[in-house]
Image 1 (cartoon, one colour):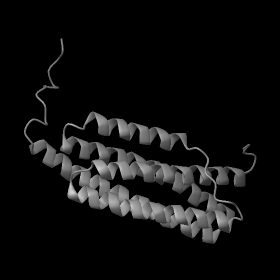
Image 2 (tube, helix red, strand yellow; image 1 turned 90 degrees about the vertical axis):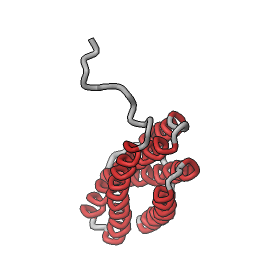
Image 3 (cartoon, one colour; image 1 turned 120 degrees about the vertical axis):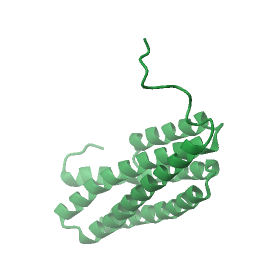
Amino acid sequence: MAIRTLQDKFLHELKDIYDAEHQFLQGQELMLRNASDGTLKQMITRHIDETRQQISNLEQVFNLMGQKAERVMCDGAKGIVSEGQKSIKETSGSPELTDLAILGGASKVEHYEIATYRGLVAGAQLMGQRDVLNLLQQNLQQEEQTARMIEQTEAQMLQMAMASPGLTGSADYNQPTG
């Protein structure tokens, strides 16, 4: 699709995040299957429900704009999900490290979504689309709240992992290599 107007750009971004949310939903389901910490599992389960609601909000946005809900491949989401899957595999020998890898991947997802929704919110404001704006702001607020939760949880889990024998490693990173 050629992007020739601001509305074209807005719709392209909308289709892009619609695809991203679907990809991230599948990624969250993988995260849930691999998470070991109970708090992390609860957080992922809650975010899966929020993501489903966000997808529904996006479908309403398409409807309000007289458009069919349509996905355009989001290569950014594809890369983030792929990187997350790789991290889960690489840390599979340690539940603590896998949980930290999951949190790191989830943080990347949230910041990608926040950046996208901020742009869409600005576009909806400029186009005077109040109902669209309201739905996009709901999604943005949920993403920002989730990002804060992830950051707090990640700090706590990192502290716990640091106390686990064998996870801190033995390398002295302050020594010159030679």
